[in-house]
Image (cartoon, rainbow, N blue to C red; front, side, top):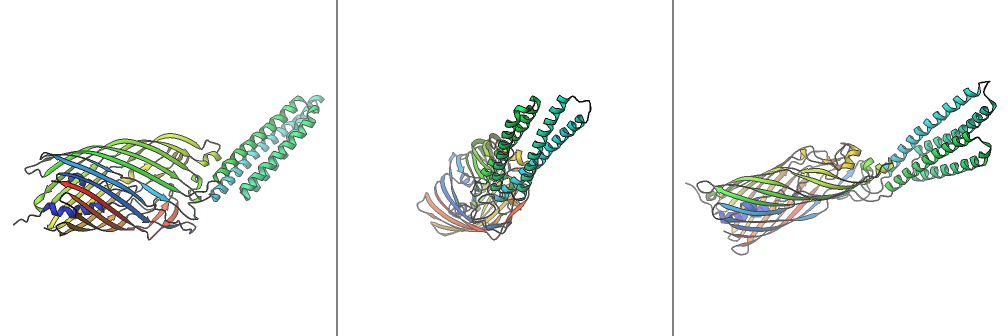
Length: 528
């Protein structure tokens, strides 16, 4: 004998679960892209507010504490739908599906002046300068050897002997100055500080000025050829000095950046949905529609952990693009059974990135650039299930899959300089949540949930070092009137331990024993 469950009352528990089911998940997943508001009977509207506070702390490779890098954040979700006759439904859903909010604190390799990186840059500059200057010395020695060979000719005219002798004297003078420069750059390589770099440049400037003074004094007694040779050598030294000054300024700028690594990603999605029911009792429904999505981000990489990318800054301007969703649902009201399978498409964004990359200035390139690039937010599949257990109890299950393994953010300047994406993930995300709702009184229902999220791989980006989570949640719903209800819920999260890594797979941090909580409140209206 079949047992009928009063669906209108059991729905109280289901909606309570939805209010508390938002959490911090794998990759950039935030809202879970819940579709259940559209699946409600009759005319329905909801406003949901969610607050998330996670405690995510760890240590860098030197054992320095990271501080709590997970900034608290909140967001809203809205939904409204209505039935048109017995078979058709229309609705609008708004949520903020993807995002990130992380900022390092304290004294560690992700904050403050990248002094180790700066010293490494100075050493690279010094080593390059030594090699370049030694090449010039070798070239001059070759010229001197050629002059010596010419002077060995007993038939060489006296006038030519005089010119070659003067040329040789100027070249030997230049060689001595270059040898001093090599010594200076070798000393800088051994003690790579900005102060020593400044001292080397100042000493070089004084030497050039002194050499120029000497050449000006003896110029009247030199041949035109020798004077031209001396001027060419002097101009070359001045060009090298200007290049060294520009590089020094770029290093000084890098060492002046005293901030913390920070990332913020925001998204907004508006889904327009239409549905049609079919079947002998309208128990099936197909639904779908267009989705508009807005995406933006800001990134700052600071500290020694990011090596050559230290000081990198990107402002990714908002872009709106479009995708779609489609799904099918089944219901059997007499046992409070509902099942829905929803697919959301990828959405291709063309974003404009204003990037600043200090390391490029050290290489003599423009550190500022503004270019467009592509980012594709991932597709997803959601499965929502509920069934009555008895006339006052409802069981629910939610399963979500997101292929974060296919996702990457590749700002042009960063990617060109490093041949790596700024952010990517190794694995796809699986999320499962089971719940049980209980009606305690005609106007009051409570619920509990347990959940699991697989994460998107480990090691994971240093901008979000969490490998999934386990969760437990509690919620309650009170029917203020026949149509209006207030729901509230909370969830506690145990985050999986993770190692933070750079895009080149270098492990730069370790995060263990972290947790967080989620609070949600919902105001809903339903008229069947």
